[in-house]
Amino acid sequence: DDSGVGWRYIAPGKPQQNGYNESFNGRLRDELLNETLFRSLPHARAVLETWRRDYNERRPHSKLGWMTPREYASAFCGETGRHAAQADSSAHRPLATHQHQGSNQPRTLVLAG
Image (cartoon, rainbow, N blue to C red; front, side, top):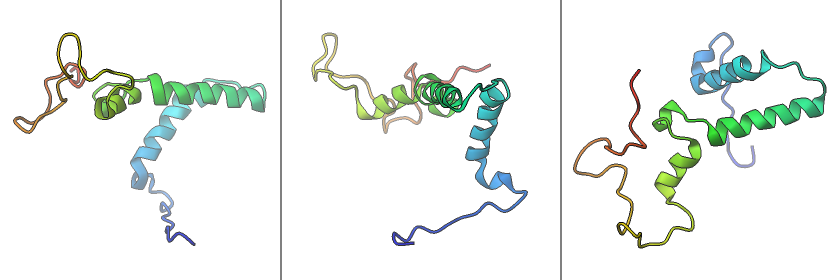
C-alpha cells in the first residue's frame, strides 16, 4: 500500500488470466513434483533449487529462440570480460539490424520440427 502497488487477483476458474504462470506451474508439476518423492524438507529444498537453476540457467527456452536465459541476456548485454577488438573481427554482428526484420544469426534461429 505504501508504494502504491495494487493487487490483481485471478478470478476463480480463470487460470487463462495468467497464462505464463500457469504454464510454469504445469512444467514444475509435470517435470518435478509428480516425479519426485521428497524424503524431507531439506531434500525438497535441494531438489527444487537444482530444478530452478536448470530451468533458469541451462535450459533452452522456445520464446528465447531456443537459447538459454544466460545466452539470451549476453546477446543483449554483451559478454563480460571480452576485449573490444577481436582477433578475427572488431565486434560480433548484431542479432538484428534496421535493414531487415528478424535475424540470420544461427543462435537466434528456431529449428522447425
